[in-house]
Amino acid sequence: MPEINRHKNDKSNKPPIDAAALLAWYDNNARALPWRVSPADRARGVAPNPYFVWLSEIMLQQTTVPTVGKYFAAFTSRWPTVQDLAAADRDDVLKEWAGLGYYARARNLHACANMVVDEFGGDFPQTAAELMNLPGIGPYTSAAIAAICYDQQVAVVDGNVDRVVARFTALDQPVRDAKPFVKSFVQQSVPKRAGDFAQSLMDLGATICAPKRANCLICPIAENCQGTKTADPTNFPVMPAKKQKPKRAGHAFVVENAKGEIWLQQRPEKGLLAAMTEVPGSEWHKLAEIKSDTIPEPEFPIRGEWRNCGSIEHVFTHFALTLTVWKLNSDEAPTQKGWWSKKQNLDAEALPTVFKKVLAKTFEE
DNA sequence: AAATCGGGGTA
DNA sequence: TACCCAGATTT
Image (cartoon, rainbow, N blue to C red; front, side, top):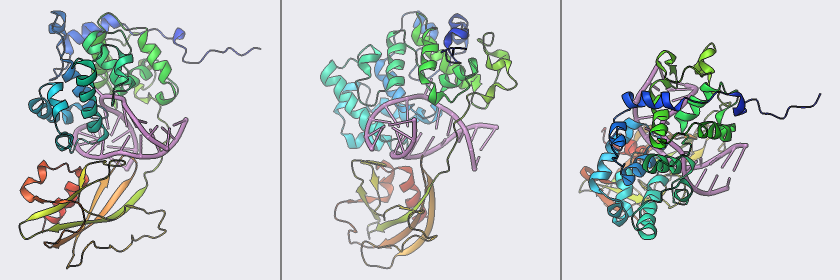
């Protein structure tokens, strides 16, 4: 008996998404967001601001809508146009981004703004293929900007859409291994109102077809959904095997001078928290590699009466970190390159959250 | 294909 | 706790 060379999730076996029904739902239930043009305004011909859409899309990468809110307001207030952002100092962009995470986004954001101004006269390219060439803009973001701003009929696939499609088609493998299928499945349903359709699918995933709750009773596309016919649609998407998070540990050195200033320095241009600001510290030892329960003794950068302030915990994407915090009052600079920063002004520095935790620990005294 | 790259909200 | 969030880039 010959093999039937057809994938189990071949789209020819799956009824498509009812775009008209989804758009009708979106017309009445769209989330109101600062960077978004409502479907009613869009129907009247109001065009989205590509700078706002692009900025929001970069901020929203792996980041929730509530978290982005304040940062989006701060950026658009300080830099109202892409020309303003391009003209800004990169360090100021990093300072505004501090706390939002994934700092390569901030570096690429500034580079992209300059490219749009220098190479495209300040106007974003209007197709996903062209947008893909800009720094920080990948498969999702290029499609999102092209669809939302210019109604290019491309499939926009983010984490929400992955989940909706996985449930809709009862996908039997992790979406990570079925990206082409998900994209082609969405593509066949993209209507003329491509931007509203993209946002409707994401809104559906954010509100009705949520990660731990599927409210199928009020879902506008439940009719053709395979997942809702199963015992529990939230069994989809199936998750890949998880692996445990390794641990690292190190020391952080906080030096305060007689004027109440803290010694800060800049991290290297590459790697974790690249180009951001930090306090001096030790290497972050991988606990498995030092074959011991205890990390090496601290090698203080300068002599003095260092005080142990306890430790802080911080969890990154791929490891968990424990830092022992040490404090010294001294007017001597502990490292070669760096600067003194007033304690009252630390919020304006480009300090990632892990170092804000370190500093907060020393202020408990 | 797998690893790297942050931080916070949710159940 | 574990999972997930309008992913991109590097290895």
